[in-house]
Length: 484
Image (cartoon, rainbow, N blue to C red; front, top):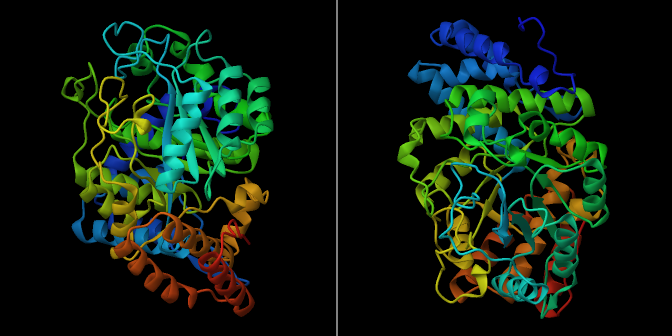
């Protein structure tokens, strides 16, 4: 039973992220971590089933999911992992969407104590890309094979006003280099106004991403002592303003390691429930970054770090709780952690990332303006080959966004089980583009063998035939950008 005064439909941050409800949830989960009967009941509720020809997965609320996270029974924990794997395959198949971050500027007026871009850091190299430098970065990313970017910038109304962000988006979309094109730009910038979100929507962005960092208000205020980000309510209510501004794909995330993970987990799911309750659709994506070493940031000074096994269980429990939501993992994590979590729910990863401003045009990876250390430093070709060797299918698809299948329209596609007839062939066609235009000989060989096998998994015979013909056209000519 929810705590009195907790209201997921409220538009006030402290009512839909209600501290007493989170604390009661954690206590309830602790009390029931050995309750096998309750855990079985929760797992049964979460299992995918078919109703009237549709694949249905009810998901879990924050209390139920918190019980699974707290579960201390080894065989039940194994069942949790298996269920997460099943849900991941049912709704996303073996597709893994590829993207890269593009850092536009590290000028920032905030005082975030966990980020090297904070205002008081006087020795980090400050840089803001010119439009010519943006073009050069985009060409470097296109030459790798990327089609989808997430742009990042510090909060600074003088150096990084919304006009600068919009100009950069226009520049990114304008660059056509050989067979390369950036087809989708996601935006990860500071909380802003409804009017600015409308302008971002009009610019053709994909998902608006904003990490909460921590849902614990007291900790949030200490971690953001100065600058506009200090305003907890304005930051936490940003997604409501984004949706009011017409952006129907938003991405949530917390920075695990700043606060106790059970608190963050419950708060993250409560935020997702709030978006569903108010707007009729939850987050398009959830990111799960962990605090990492950076210029003047030592993660060991924060005492809420989590080991890999707990981190992996968090991924599994999020996947079970929000089955239709994409899950993102960056190159903050090592190859081995990414490998294990891909099976548990991750559906998008970055590849060949550089977290410094202007980093892609540098031959050697620059470290003087990085936001955080990159653990997985492999090339995109190496990451693509590794994914395929692990049985995953790398996808560079952006079709849904350009066909208007966003928000609840994407969710209905996902829930109807049509992913294999739509997203799967789109993934195969974009992977073919990558293999023909950018891949090494060995990656190309492995990829075409994978594509031949995966074509047979497209259930609709007509869709399979069209995809096969399009793939042959991609191989034989410079025709690109086929999509269902």
